[in-house]
Image 1 (cartoon, one colour):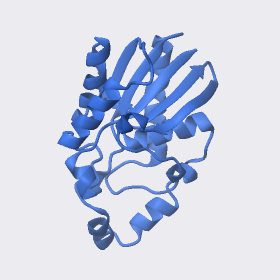
Image 2 (tube, rainbow, N blue to C red):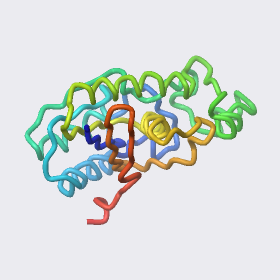
Image 3 (cartoon, helix red, strand yellow):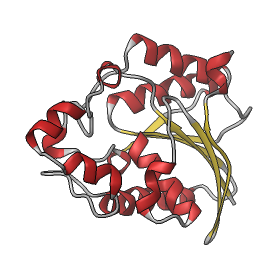
Image 4 (cartoon, rainbow, N blue to C red):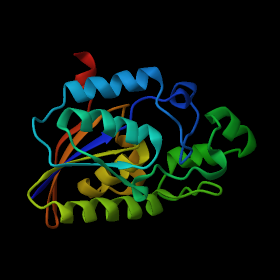
Length: 202
């Protein structure tokens, strides 16, 4: 059985501005760095065996803060990158809605069938993210691992573990530096914790 601590990265400037980041390589803001450091200092487990991260800076920096506490290297995986938001990257809701009328409403109302112009669908994202997670778990049987990733990535991983259809994916909340704890035992999945930000209160 592998225990997975699934983390969302800290806040970025684009988060604060409501811009869709996707695979744009945006740094953590000062607030995001503080969030990541608080998570590292108040991590929910006393021992972990390995740390993985998306190769995008915001996730990698979040992982690096945790890694420093445990004196472990961060292993980067391109497959853990955020959803590709294609033509929508760098734009906010109103800008997207003005240019692609109705598509944002469809994205939120029917995420299982939505296709971002020039980007990915949730099904495509879930396929690559789940494949990456299962590969990592196979490499770490009976160990505890950390993965620092992104909001949409984490939602698809959690939906797969819950056997939840993608049309309900917005029912899963992922705040900045949210902690999720899952266990993988062959084909069995269980979720022990979801979207915890208790570390930010300490």
